[in-house]
Length: 256
Ligand code: ADP
Ligand code: MG
Image (cartoon, rainbow, N blue to C red; front, side, top):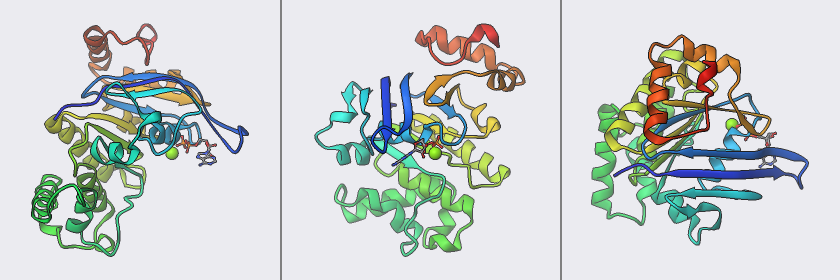
């Protein structure tokens, strides 16, 4: 498996007949296998953008291409969501009446045989460190354990793109750091592209690149540069990424 290439071009999205302008004009590129953090104040349009990339909704204008396909015009958006994308949300959205093992199998229903589903779910739960809790129900798990189940479920169909919307937002900082480590490890092992929405500067700083939205447009304000300045090698690693991929957007290096 490898990561998906994501190209967002001049995307606009409003709600309630245009009264709420969530995204004004957003363009960005994610290289295959890249881990990018998306930050910005509450209400600035982060979840809206993730939902559009995940084909949970369609842009009003502009285009989003994932591996060259316009996801606003898919014939089978649910097939794309199930087969190409893995979602992790702030609140795990697990089914409380199903065990961890059953929850992880849900996205595989109708796509694999019963035996293959269960075998894969077991191996994914082991991978996220929940070998001992496979038969547990979500209400009996800790917040961090539930997020691990949610992560295993997101990986069920081998996504090429992982969209994580504040996955550590409801966790204490130690647990959040563990979940982030896990996401990074999974990204390294599976090679998928990861777009990680977070309001936590420490979390964002662990990404290869930080994109910031403010009032519906992408920006790179001073606060973020300060954070990067404190991290040894951050500036160099971004510069390397740019050389490698020739990216123009994101953080203005000169100002770091
Ligand atoms: P963030 O994730 O950055 O906090 P959102 O993308 O959720 O922000 O929301 C951006 C703006 O769009 C907010 O003003 C929010 O209230 C509005 N919004 C988001 N989804 C909807 C919706 N389905 N209907 C109406 N307004 C919405
Ligand atoms: Mg949000």
